[in-house]
Length: 102
Image (cartoon, rainbow, N blue to C red; front, side):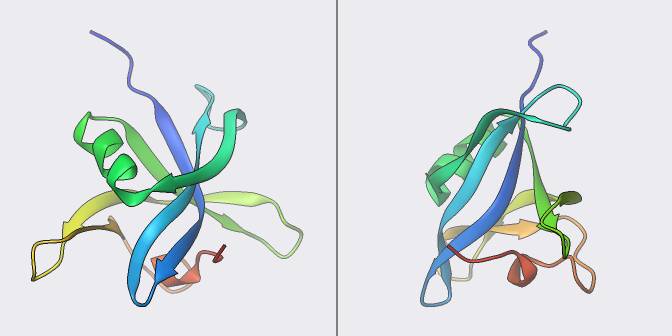
């Protein structure tokens, strides 16, 4: 069985209230370093990675700029049928709206 990749999202871009891009990078096997640094990635490409079975985690910066793992990212479907992103377990300080914008 093929090993699934782990990606991290560090920031989001919105058009109005809709997420349109994520700064997403490929993490190493320990999820401690980048194999591929984050780059702007369209939401449909993020959704494709999730559908393929890859893991995507949110990464939240602290006051010193270090990134800390947050909840896993999942696909959500808006009432009009548009696919978007949400977090598996949102809590104060660890919500999509808390990620930086780019």
